[in-house]
Image (cartoon, rainbow, N blue to C red; front, side):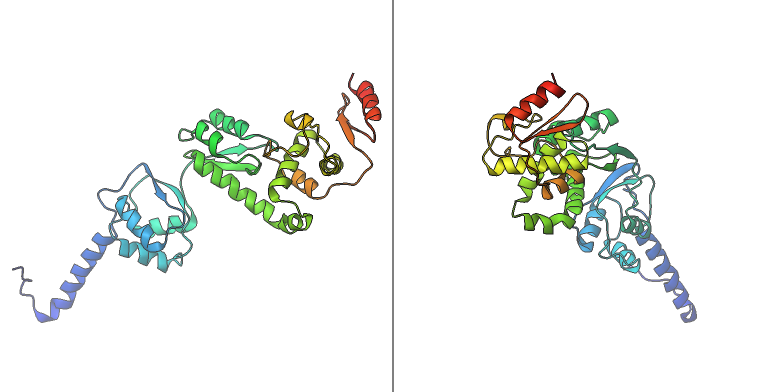
Length: 295
């Protein structure tokens, strides 16, 4: 049986203090299995206890208890940020807790601008141009919801995957659309219909005045059961009703135009060779505009 050396009673507190210090230093030191030069994942929605256990399993920390203690001391028990973190070198649980609290991922990001009106397929192609090694184009194009990926400038981690990219862009869409939801409810239209209409407007116009006028024309034609005859989506040309889904990912101005159409006497419009929109009240006037501005 192990026995402590026979120290004088007066020196026992010092001995126990040294032992306690050594044990504490061991507990907070990075484990030998620390994943140097690799990426570890902090799952979305992880509670502090589950996160500490997860980090222990990934070999990042030696003691879940001391990680939880560090997180609580830093005031971040509920503020841990999910994502992927690059571990360039061994770090103790206090440093790890601080990094996760502040979202210090230490992963290279790439500036990626998604223009208004880009389709899921076009967005996917941007990731090929920028070389994202973990991005699955096929999966993204199959799973990402057309119309609900917000066009914006993003700083994407080079470790972005199809699912993480979809989540980032959908979360941004939710943030941007949230202030408009009272208007959506007042319109008595579904959000899906608003976004689908906005996608048509996005493909047809290039300024806000025309967006709102075209919005009024298309909603009016829709109400009367007339074919929308929108060139950017030929299946809307012959049949009444909106497309089953958005045809691209519209920007906030087109979404606002879909919500605030301008009432006019027009039923037809076209974009001439001069780059301007020309409107007509009747089909005969529309034909004249075609001959005048297109042919």
